[in-house]
Amino acid sequence: MYTAQEVDARIAQMKAEGASKAKIIDTASDMCIGWPYVFGAAGEMCTVSNRKKYAGYNPGYADNIRKACPALSGKQSACDGCQWVDTRIFDCRGFTRWLLAQVEIPLFGGGATTQWETASNWASKGSIETIPRGLVCCVFKRKEGRMSHTGMHVEGDSIIHCSTTVKTDTLPGRPSWTHWGVPAGLYTTEELRAAGLDVTDAQNTPTLRKGAEGELVKKLQARLNELTGAELNVDGKFGAKTESAVIHFQDLHGLTADGVVGPKTWAALGALPDTPAAGQDIAPSIPPAATDDQPPTICIPYSDFQALRAAVLSAYHVIKKYEGVE
Image (tube, rainbow, N blue to C red; front, side, top):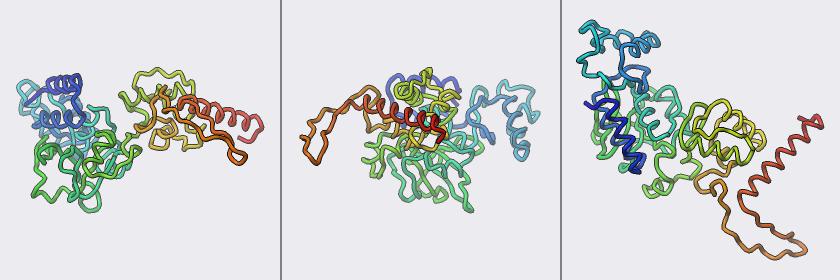
């Protein structure tokens, strides 16, 4: 059984080598096989204190959490010699969330059902008979109207999931797995379309909110600084200041000012994958000649247009507040 340090080192190595997000998840999930199940956990180290913590959080599962731990159950006095020393603890939804977090993809929802029902989590999803067999994706079991279990579909039609421990299953001949979902941002839109999925760039852009971290958060912070002068520290951490800057931007653009960066906010930022990045201009074109019925067309760089748009909207709201309208 691999230790947490060995898995972390392998993930770091694969990132440095430029491995795809899907390949990193495929490898990491396989290396976690045998790691223990603890209800409510999402990748914390397997220690007596962490097990006690989750037993306290979830009284209905406390006995099972204690019985599965040699130290807590009294089978041995300490963790020395335990098969799970230096591993991590998960429940089913915590396992898939942790795997995706290793490649900076957020998976929102406190349980399997809410993860499934949070539309912004998914670039595409469907019933199990339509699963794109060549893709890494999350899978679910629906029972009595709710998602009772979740895991990760990886190469070779294997499913790696956490139930008593992290273990493997195979998709063929396992009708209990009922649904699948490809997380937004795990593949490029072009890769998903090549796999036969009808996906837009907006659907395939992860939703960000307070607590998110990673390169996509840095992109958001830099874009907000460019368009609004927010003066955020571009550190890849979506904290209170970034949330306030998002709310301000959303308010300026007439969007729902909730601090959550979904497809509409990404589009307004001009930061979806199919739009020019910050500082990048649209290829120049020759405007049509002006006529008496058609005013002249003015071509300006995309970045200048975005800055002008933000300035006009900001001035509009200042005037409205001065006039007492807002």
